[in-house]
Every structure is written in C-alpha cells, then in structure tokens.
Image (cartoon, rainbow, N blue to C red; front, side):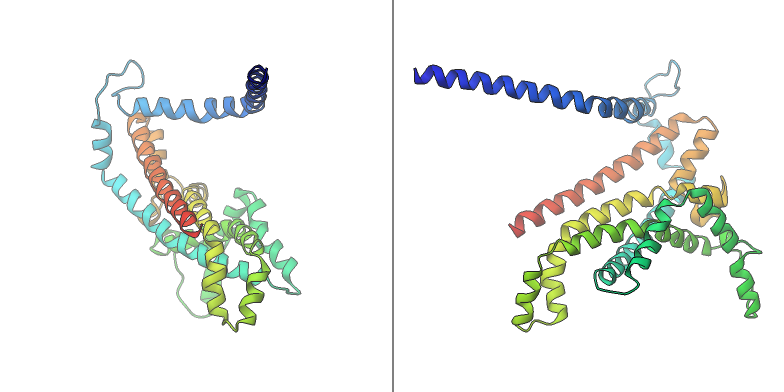
Length: 300
C-alpha cells in the first residue's frame, strides 16, 4: 500500500509539473515569439548571408566576407575608434557614477534635486539631446562664443580630434543616471551592521570602503560594467544625428561602417561586420560572467 501511495503521489507531482510548465510556456509565449521574430530569426538570417556571395540565390563562399571585412581599412579604423571610445568612456562613467552614488547615499538637503538632475537625461528624447549638443558645440555655438569672449580661438569641435571628447561627454551625460541608480541600490543593500562593527573596532574610512563596500558592491560593479559597455555601442544615434553619415575620422564607429554598407546594399559585409561585433560583445560578456561566478564562489 505504501508503494502504491508513493507511486500515486509521484504521478500527481509529474502532472502538476506539467501544468506549471504549460502555464509558464503560455505566459512566456508572447515574449518568445516577439524575440524570435524581431531578433533571433533576423540574426540567424544575417549569419547565413555572411557566408554567401548574394542574398538572393547566393552560393556559399565560406569566410571570404569576413576576410574582406577584416582587411578593410574602414573597418579597422571603425574598430579602433570603437575600442578607444569604450576604453575611455566606460572607466570614466564607472568612476563618476560610483562617486555620485556615494554622494547621493548620504543625507543631503539637495539630494532630491540631484537625483532628478541625473535621471532626467534618461527620459529626454534623442532629438532634443542632439539639438542641445549641436547648439553647444557648433562652430557658432555657445561654447565657442564663450571662448571668443575669453579671447581664445574657436574650435571646430565635431571636425577635429576634439570630436571624441564631445562624444564621450554626450555618452556620460546620457547614461550616468542609470549607473547611479544601480550603484545606489547596491550601496543601500549593504547591511549597516558591518559598518557599525567596523566603527567599534576603530577601522578607518578607507579600510571600511575596501573591506566592506567594495566587497559587497562587486557583483553590482560587474553588472554596471557590462551594461556600460553595451550602452557604449548604442551611441551611434547621437553621433549619426550630430555628425552625419561620414563624421570625422576620430568618431567613425563600427555602426557607421555597417550603416554605410547598408546604404550601399553590401549586405554580406554588413552581416559579417555585425556578426564580428556581436561575437566580441558575447566573448567579453562571457568573461565578465565567469569572473563574477568565480568571485561569488570565492566569497561563499
């Protein structure tokens, strides 16, 4: 009798799991269908095109399109500029957002105003952002008017080496609020008891930051770094609207290269370049996630 009861319970458990699985599939179906139609299927189709010589009745050419892209001077310039932009802007935005998160984690009488000021750029439309920065950095813009008032020479900001600096500033201004929110949530999730114990033991501020704040903020740091790198690849909209199809060589990014390939209907090189960029992002994301898992297992 006991064996029969256990068998009946096992069958009921399997039925309940099936019902739960079916309910989960039904709830996830709209999102899965949308993701497949708008992301997964187009990416798989582009991956297929990258190994063909034509999009219509094309023949398999192997890695020829990838070799053509890698040997292209335009692609090399775009990749170098993209890596330079990411390597400069991401550490800056991480450092600044972490400092401002520490500032907002304290009791300040202007705390609400600062929070609004940092979050506001996230909800401002891109067109408004572009118009504001065009007014600021144009040859006859506000910044050059200030320089002329100070008896200094004007700078053609978007057609000189300064264009990369402008792009970094725009990226930080647009995305710093998101990072501050994440860091602030991480700081507020650290138990206050640890700091009180450290104060009783006479620990210095630097010791508390290194052995408490930094340790418990590291998982958030991994996520913020990963999201900052992904967001750095989305700066094309602002750059394209400010500088156009063919900007200064310093801010000619991978997205410009792919956009120009699209305009010339060179879909094979476009898809090959897009696949290489996605592969690079996935490789870096995998390394970051592996480091996070190792850190978490080390802390446990």
